[in-house]
Length: 329
Ligand SMILES: Nc1ncnc2c1ncn2[C@@H]1O[C@H](COP(=O)(O)OP(=O)(O)OP(=O)(O)O)[C@@H](O)[C@H]1O
Image (cartoon, rainbow, N blue to C red; front, side, top):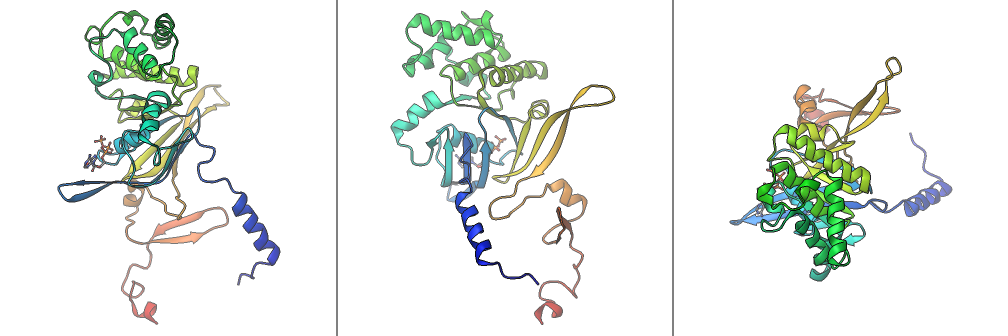
């Protein structure tokens, strides 16, 4: 039997709860129980169902998930293009729920950059690469005079390895070049966060690799925090953190770190899968795991000294089932 806590223990617990950092305090992006409900033809679709996500400054993170799991909905909210139905979300100290229309416009121009899947949606067709990159600087009234803006544009095109496209219009560039120029446009105002929704979705694998390398360069050289939605396994497998969304919630995460093999001296990327535990204690187990063990509806739990064991329901028969004679007693 557990003894009742002493007065001092209770006082310590109260102090610890008070001093505990508020959720997401240190994060650059924080999504707290985000809900987004769409109503189409009288039917409600819950695109986000209490999604929690924290992203630290400087991270390069991949978001993966089946079609319809809520990835684009989340990206549109983070980009300031849409509002959640409920929940809280902050990006670089901007509260995306209470923001006024004017603040929202400034947020979209200065705080976030966005790269879309469709190459044709990212660039203005009648402007050259340099002019496309200089435009957001002009709109944000940043970047100084015309010459200074052109210099900044050239610097970015150079960094992303598309300097040769400086005087070309989009139709004179390949799909991969267009996406790298689009990345330069999105980075022009030095955004705190760069969002990309399937930026390599229309490209062949070799070109996709080059475009992804440009994202990595932006992250490493400019320190930009990047969130990329992708179906591309080679992208998802190369970042340090991949977050999987399922049914409008963050379900699992894969974290990767380098380890040096002591025998060969070779550096390998080691991956480990984690499940997300929300503040209500809810956990989503990967479907492959529960299917493999035939788990559904109810599972057996055991608290061990250093872990919690989750096992198939061993009482799934009439004697012990819900409403059984034993339970009713
Ligand atoms: N404007 C809208 N009106 C009604 N339903 C919507 C709207 N936008 C999204 N949905 C629905 O919300 C759910 C999540 O959609 P979302 O586009 O976020 O998924 P996704 O994970 O990005 O999918 P995909 O990988 O196919 O792009 C889907 O069921 C979708 O049909």
